[in-house]
Length: 460
Image 1: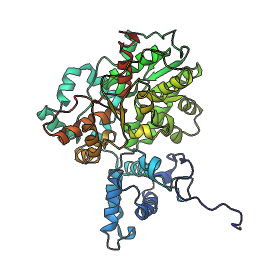
Image 2: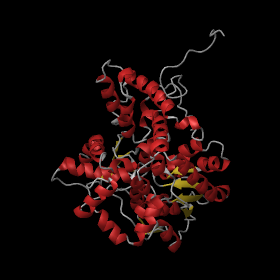
Image 3: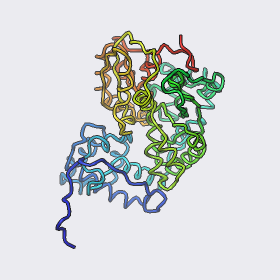
Image 4: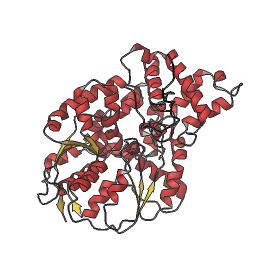
């Protein structure tokens, strides 16, 4: 067949990136020999490009393997060493979304994060995942049990409880110095039932309806994020329903347990579908969870119409507030904050391909002085708290910590896990110097600018 008249292939990121559905139901997906052959193909292209050298530690590890190989090329790298590259990947998606010039529809067809996901799934099928790691990923079960004894649980995981943290490191492989999320028995679900919010009828956006998908983090670990979101949305006329059928599956995805993610996706989507059909948007307060519903679920279950419907209705909390501002206008009452703000844009917010909505939302506050940090914090979900990864996670996040430490006023992050990690990085960079006690979610700052108190949207 003649190539005459066919357009030449375009070089590098000149078209919007696309992603293929994950073929996780096929036996070939878990064939380790075939996975390693694909890794060799992709790694060889990455070695020739090296554009991603400063994103995370996966690429420096890969390039060191090649540079130290007898031939100086990938053909003499032991495939057993590929595990070191895969283990350093946090599935942040930044290489795919912001750096790689060879993502689909380019003919090279590179999707580094999903290749690593496939490798983890294949290794899980071959060797399994250690019991303790599997148990750590059961965020719903862990959140409910810890919430029953929240005082004891939070004492046990406190950073200064050296005895218990040493034991946790030995038993679970969680680094003794890594900050861990605290637990709340009074979950976001319980708080919403105890104090139903009323939509502000005078708001321009009155008539909107939204489901605040609580997420395991906002439900069990930081309900204040969800309460602030409820308050801001209610004041802006939104009828808010809090729902939490189950975890979105991100902790299981990190381990390659794709079939478990699919089960959770079906369960949650079926639970939320009636609300979507009744006109509710699905709003997630944590970027990783919004990314799962929007992007990963449809790639795992591409033929599921319920998942597709719920996915299309999902928005990040910052995205939803900006949408109100653009379409109807925000309710009056925003007041300037007393101090400047430095916002860390989370990788999984950037990976949603929606623009810097966290920054757009904060710029709605009158006279705000806002600086933005667009680098990875280094945390990477559960990856960053593990014994073997925590020092590296601090190293990757050190540029963010330095920028945050040099900032005036409030440091905020869209990702609550990144927020704690940034605070710890700042402590290490600052030494004995002052460091913020907390790095809040930006929705808390918007609530503060509104002067909102309580979960129901009442004003002070």
